[in-house]
Every structure is written in C-alpha cells, then in structure tokens.
Length: 333
Image (cartoon, rainbow, N blue to C red):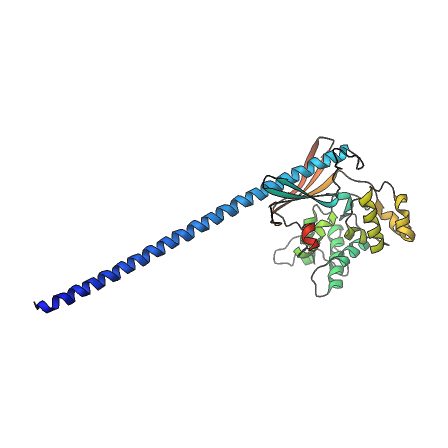
C-alpha cells in the first residue's frame, strides 16, 4: 500500500463521519421540534377544552340564575325593591353576572310577548317577514312563498295556496317528507317549510331571526306588550315606529297594567291595534345564557324554554346547546 494514500483515506473517513454527525444532529433537531410542536398543540388543545367546559358550566349557571330570578319575580311585584334590586325583566333585557374568573349573560323572555306561530294571522306573518332582514334575490316573492307555505303546512287539506306548498312539493324533494297538516310543535319545524332558510330562522351577522320572535307556547293571538320585542310590535296591524318607541319607553319605567293606560300612546290607532294586544303574562319563558371568560364576549350559549309550575317547581319544554346568542353589547357596536 502506498503510504502517501493513508492521510487522504483518513481525511475521507473524517469527512464522512462529520456528515453522519450533522445528519444525526439534524434528525434529532427535527424530533425535538416535533415533540415541542406536539406539546404546544396538546397544551393549547387542553386549554381550549378546559375553557370550553368552563364556558358551558358558566352558561348552565346562567340558566339556573335565570330560573331563580323567574321565581323571585313571581313572588315579588316589579315595584318591590329588596336590598336595592328589582326582579329581572322578561322582555329580553340582558343581565350580566360573574362567577369566579368567568362571567355569564342572561336574558329572560316571556313567551306571551312573541307571536304564536299556530295562532298568527296571515297579515301579522306577512308584516313580520317583511320587516325581517335577510338575504333574498326577490324578498317580496320569498315572503309570499313562506307565508303561504306556513298556512299550507298547518291546514288539514292538500290544496296549496298561490305561492304555497303541500305534499306534492315536499314528496318531490331529494329527501321527501310530508307536510304536518296540523299545528307546529316547535318553531324550528319551520326549517321544513318551503322558503325558510337557516338565516331566516336563526338570523345572521347580529340580525334577528324568527326563532327570537315566534313561539308555539303562546296559545293566543294576542301579544303581551310588556314583553314583546320591537320587531313583534311592528308586525301588528296599525303599529308604527313612533308608537313602538313610545311603548318601549313607557314600559321601561313601569309595567303596563291595562290597555287604557297607554291609550295616549296608541292614539287613533288604538281601535286597530287593540284586538291584538294584552298585558297578561304566561308561565312559559325562554332563558338564554352565554358563559364566557372575562374580556371575551364570545362563549358557550344555551337556549331553554321552561314552564313554571307553582312557586317551587318548573319543567323544561326545550333545551338546546350550544347555540349562538347575540349580545346587546355586540348589537350596539
């Protein structure tokens, strides 16, 4: 062997060793970074999971607080102050509570302040949908389709109105079904009705949906003006924005005890509006609650309908979670 070739061979071996070491270091760095990324991902996932459960528990606490306030309201008149506070209002006013490091928002709405889907007249349904904000290429045609289809869904026959739909239409869909030909059992059943979209039912981008304005627990064609939201009041025949503003301002100061009390606000429209309004509440309420971490308005939402049974008992008629519930704070932005 030529002695002169030995240093070169050793040099080559050293170079190969260096490359192997660099590759090993590169692989180790990739493994370390992979473990670091996985650890961070697990940490964030665990934190999100924990905050999600905390928000859910905060929302449930908000629902329980709302139910407690309903019983307090039943046992105490609105004018009674106890330790500097009055019973919560049932017109959708938003209340905020804190629990530990979290918070919850709660709204109570008397179902008597909503339009009963099974009792509403064609005129009121048409007014309600006309005033509702939603996306449609031809809004008037969409409104006519929905109103006629709602009436067709409820009536017992198979003859459809001009813009409505009956079994022949629903049976022709990719997933066919039959019209109920009877009263709606839930407001969400509207999603089965021709023309009704999730946007129209639930609202979008902080816009109100039918879910906030309709009920199947009212069992009357009269609206409780102490609890009705402005959109419901505007749907009543003869109602104007000026009258609605007057009613909202008046009931903010005191509960309306009788219709004669607001005759000055109704003015000449009293005879037209009178048959559609009352001041009577009900025993069925919607409780909406959102649990969230401080400095974060978005959170976990729950919507429930409960029926009070006496001064100590209640039962759930409806319970859904999670749901998106718009906040008064968000709406004001």
